[in-house]
Image (tube, rainbow, N blue to C red):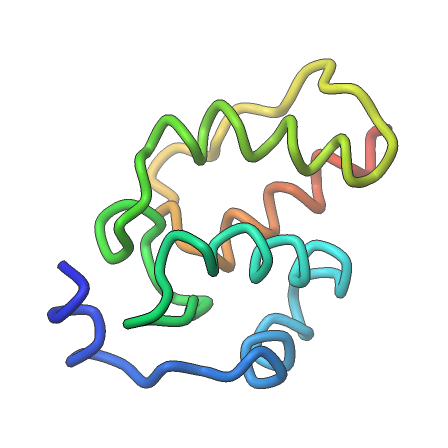
Length: 108
């Protein structure tokens, strides 16, 4: 998986990653995503906004769906209450996950 992902796209730096997400995802959410994903993928990869979180990266789906929303809420001093349903047919990319986190946090 890692070799296929690396062959398909470049490894952005932190600054490049944040800049690529800037038009659509808040800076705080982009930083959360970088900091959360990086331990899963280093040293071979860095996260890319268009990566699918568990098809392109060595990340367990349960970590993303169960742990990350709660971790995100905690970083904002909130408790996990309820989250909107994931939009049907939407790929679980880094960018889309960031959009979803931002949308959910608007209701806090």
